Image 1: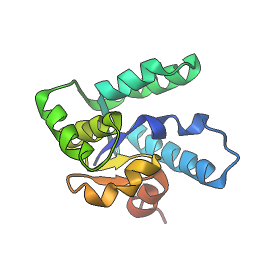
Image 2: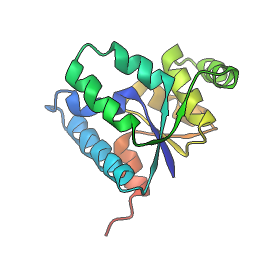
Image 3: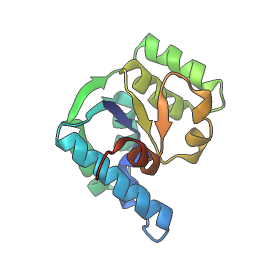
Length: 146
């Protein structure tokens, strides 16, 4: 199973953990990354993740996110096909960077796009090319733990 984690989910552990939702999303995201490290899931990476991560003003956060790039099975660069996919997705009302992330995930043949972004999650049912979940719902749906 191939998964695309957007920058919101990659950076979730750095957010204030005072809210229960954020703590649960953090734990779920860390569990997903553990499965990636164990080779049970494949991670897809993109130039959009690189772009957003480079813009992160916090060096420690940038470095932690960069470590995950080495675990990716695919790293996609901008292409006309990705831009076309992103344009179709943006017509639903998503921001350009969010649409580019989703275009990269679809292009990378990901099964799931995992995000904590409420704007993307609200439109997830309108995007048929990929399953979009927040980390909690992904773990609840996919993990088969006893």
